[in-house]
Image (cartoon, rainbow, N blue to C red; front, side):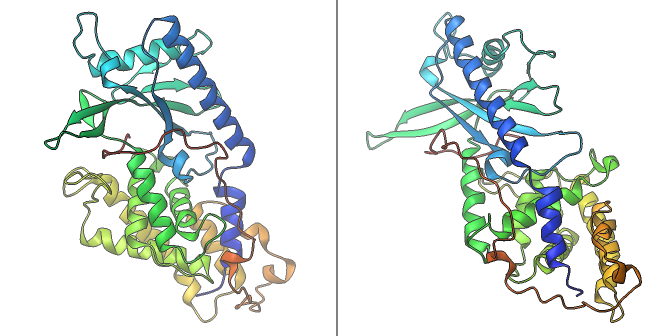
Length: 360
């Protein structure tokens, strides 16, 4: 396979992983929302939250750049079940809990008012992204030994046992266990970002293709590590996911038993991802030809990601179809310090105890 490892890593750093300025802006908006919620709850004589916890792709650090900044930041809020009571002393319904948080965060400063949606409270920003605030309650029950068991429930259409922090813990563990490198965010996380970037490369795919959570689960199932070649790891993982979906379109939830991410045995979004991966792999066939040039190889990666990033790297000698440089002499890139990564410097706000499932 023609060696474009350095170029694929460059595309990850320049066009895929989030710039620091965007990460800082998101963290600032998240923290401002937390302050609004606390102040609004106090003003409305509603209970104070036990804790907040970032979750989803923001917390797993698998978000990718989007031209319209269409980002979904999940930031869960947790209450004690005993604190969520109605006026007659009965447990507050899931809908009323979401409405309570919506009223607290809506301080009149938003151009578009926050909404209590099916599984969360959504806060919109003019920058293009939104913050979702799923609402949880902490439930303590007595067990047969006289001790206490703790689990968490999400305010969805009803209260549903769930805690998205379990998903973050699962992914962090898989990234650490499977990646061959120990620095720069680890390769499995980068491959997740790169395949998510491919899935977002055409605007017309948005409503049809698998979402980020499904892609992340498939990458952890099918990841093919290659410590020396980022491009080979990406190609081999894309091929393995395509082959896996040819065999079975059902994708199980990573932490909740008997629950699937896909809908039914022929999920259209999983099928669409499979078909588009098949297309991408065919576009990359040129990389395995004996007469492949650097110009050919970079044009193929351009087509995969629907960009001109790779061809823009060509020098004059490459544009003349120079066949030199087929092997670019790129040893162990993962530990070379060439790969950028991002992490949230803020401490984790909540510690998982028990529970399962995932918001959104």
